[in-house]
Image (cartoon, rainbow, N blue to C red; front, side, top):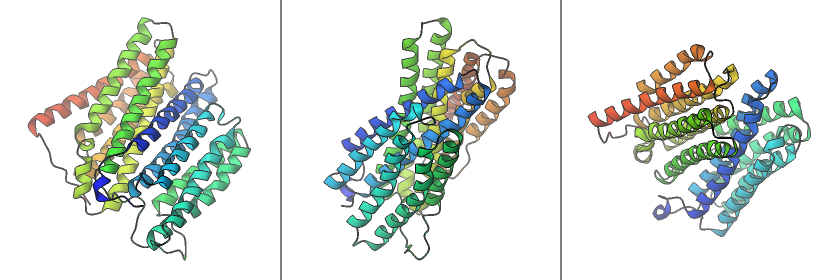
Length: 394
């Protein structure tokens, strides 16, 4: 059932199909958060920031755990194919509940997630019972997921603030469990990790595809909103700025760490560490892209209104999060801190106060100009040092 070296370089069509469902899921998060961000109630507006993270993280975590399964196991195996398809349906079900995620239909969100996160490791543990370290790994994962299932399901039954609190605890348990290798006392823990990048190319390519999916969702969201609104000067300019921003995020990601990620993984000695850090970097970047998409929606709806602080958090915070994740990726691939991206973050934060007296369109344009400066600096660096070779730390 395990992947062979001859088939480990490229994602197959089943994995790409799963990514299509993720596009729908990420757009669902943007559609769920944007109305709250535009609400007249101050508490609802600020709560939308927490809602965005709390809804996006389980969806992205489900994608992450699924892609690591398909990276380790042969996706041509019928059992693995069924597992991926069931995972896609579970992701679809979770997405259908997003519009009422905190006032109803909580179990529609929580139950598929719990079933997949507990059930899949148990099934895999049974399938690899002759491979003791791998079996122990999946049993530990199932044990931690069973613990987090309690607040997930309890939150699905309760509503409002209680649900938010319980689900926050649940997703923290999931992420902390993975960070500590799902440690369980007295259960075998040998030198095998769920996050080791066994193939430099397959998983690196999957993370690249995740970034492209998130960027594609951003274009889809802003394009759909522009279609249903009356075309005016403000939202038309907002559409241009959103599209240019998406291009710049794509360019900044792929130069040069995103482009040579597979080579860095192949060269790294510590595959466990580089796998874990690469996953965290991409998670941060995707959440940043989602924030950019929500900010673009605000620009479409209120391009010339007085900017509110919470809107500015999304419009500027999205690029800041993206650059933070990109800095982390550069640390993985080249074992250095990107000066250009650090300066970009400082500029975005410095612009926050003067932009409070502007409009959403002006704020989004300012953020795009900062990203443009980084992209231009990258292009100059590429001219001086073409074909830079990765130097991973591990």
